Image (cartoon, rainbow, N blue to C red):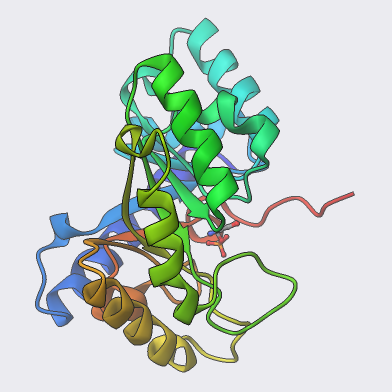
Length: 236
Ligand SMILES: *Cc1c(COP(=O)(O)O)cnc(C)c1O
């Protein structure tokens, strides 16, 4: 996709974010738009950054590392000035590659992963923020803790030896596949209630097909790929 069309699509999404925030009685800057650049080349990141995007989402550790390396060696300001979000499933043995590199790890769903993040953060002398992924549809194919398991998991994480080197700031979820964005409203609303119950401020919910509904229901972070960068190449 050309630089110009990424800029045009980004501008449209930014506008839709602002209008959805307005409908939800919220300020547009209460919502962080994460441009999900997975499978798209570093050039696409550069184009989106030049057009104003500041938060980027990646799902794969190796891809994140190589993209960052490419942007750094090209001297792109996106390498140092952008905030990176790790939104995929993170394997424990890869945790060291994201700690301190990403502003937020979105999908923590067990205490062992939190323990590794905390240990790596302590060793690196940084504090690592993360979200808990909640599996709202009980789907075996997806990660995430069941809604009624959130309290226990938060307690277990708080009891970790290096607990003060990590902070759980909120919840993240990918609702089950839906026919229409409106079908996901109930999930977004429940996630917002669950976060409130636990005094958690951040809500990472909403993707290309449903980010406006998510914002109306309180999303603080929306993860939007296709609407900005176009279709992802089919996986081989
Ligand atoms: C790929 C991905 C997205 C972006 O999806 P689009 O439908 O392309 O906007 C958002 N969140 C997660 C967790 C993803 O893996």
